[in-house]
Image (cartoon, rainbow, N blue to C red):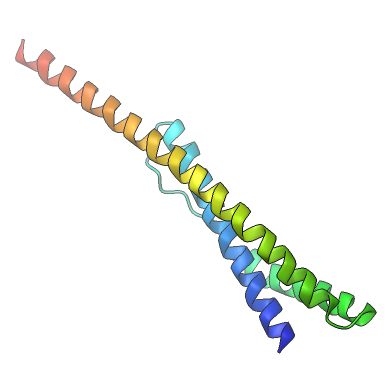
Length: 118
């Protein structure tokens, strides 16, 4: 049962990382004048990270009972607030960049209409 919890937590770790990666990629897209449609490749991470974390927990559990489980739960507890703060910060930056780019597009659209009227 403890290994199932470790695997579930490692999958959650992976998806939290995907959210940050995608938001950061969208920031790069907007900064370069592109549409914010970044993605993340889930294939190598989904099978590798849960297996690696499960092996790490098993290795620590072989040294001391339940040590790996408690380390993974502790890391998850520490990582979750950091992830939340990072995602909120990146999302705020993305939203401000999107608002600025919309203002630039609106200004360019207004200038184009005014030029066409003359």
